[in-house]
Length: 154
Image 1 (cartoon, rainbow, N blue to C red):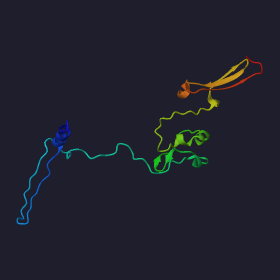
Image 2 (cartoon, one colour):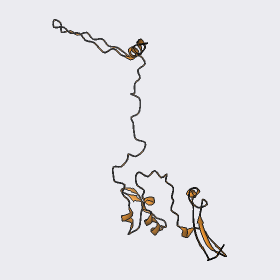
Image 3 (cartoon, rainbow, N blue to C red):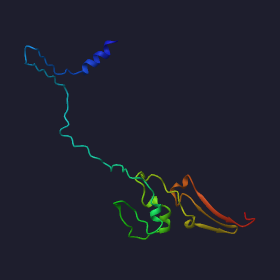
């Protein structure tokens, strides 16, 4: 049982070139060993990145920069200005949606929804507007209702 690991080790060991020298002779003998099944990587392409390298820059928020002026999706040299319509007050509230930090992979769903643009139901006892999965896909885990009922309303 002890010989099995040694036998396995011996099969993977390769002989090193050996040289002999003596004080009487200045000639050396040279032996070489070749390994069976060696492969070469000379024809393989060089490694290249498939995604951009992570930035060492701080992932600061653009909240201070967007408090005045027109918010634009520009981070350093990346991005461009917006040529279409903008909701500037809403873009100032959420600068990370407009110019996300470099660590953002875009997998976090938006949980902000202004109730002012939700449908409002007006009934005898008051009114109610709700936000559910019809307008916001994350509403399967979270929903909201804003309502006002008259005193004694059912």
